[in-house]
Image (cartoon, rainbow, N blue to C red; front, top):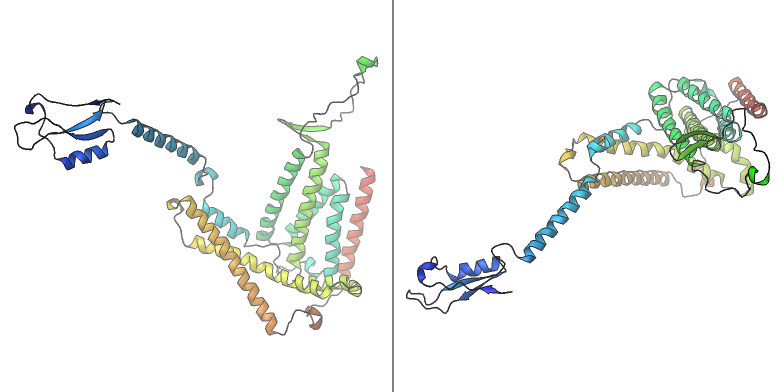
Length: 400
């Protein structure tokens, strides 16, 4: 690239020359310029005049500078575009503190916690009868028609509202109903929602000379509802109702059983049903001991989740001043603290069992259930109700 040499006719044509260090600094700041010493001798003392030789492109920035600034501008635009996709607390409708409050509220009423008061008739029913009812409530929704499924859901809902305290059934029924509703909607539109792309190979009646079959006048329609490209059909209704009602029955019946029965009673009832399997080599004592430890340990898990969430909320963290990675780091530390406390509790339980003489063989140690099962009039009435329900389910299949 051509260079422009500024050669004045006399010494007054240029301002006083700058020292060489300053000119070198300017040349370093502007890569398109270079310092040259003029051979022109003038009268003043100094010997020569240092000239600033620049590129012919003028005083604007060089091509490299312009390309770097353009690259930085494009990178800034890309960062701004990606930052627009990052979910904010205002977009999500709930910040980190609200999420922690929801977690602490959900863990405040665990589904397996035994409620001693108010004492209802379910507390006095034999645990063996409760296990039979649990098995029936798992089988009946899968084997009965749609009216029977929704009838069982309504029955469990009313029983929960009658037996459980207000703060317990409101919390549990809301979550179980939300989960079952999501399952119903997803399976209803997903099982048979997409229209079939396969065309029939049978020719139309007009081609083979047959009259058109008249449409049905009974009002039957396979498609119940359409939502854009998706459709809610009778097959989707059957699959969705079966899965949703079965999920609701399993969760809510287990919640009712665990809320009105102590872990020792459940272990003794399961022992009574499994004791014949001991003669064929099934490790019944190990299974019963594992069940007891699991039922005792689940409450500790809920307590740790709730206490750790409340500990973070109590510190009043200003989440708006934290970066995204700092918020994620707090949640990772929250999960790590939960697992650490749970493992500490497990270690304490194992040390307590070893201190009491347990060495890993349940056959050498007697398990005390601290409960005595008694079969009374309430249990007989409960079994009669179960037989009536099963008979109603079998009759309803023939009537519908």
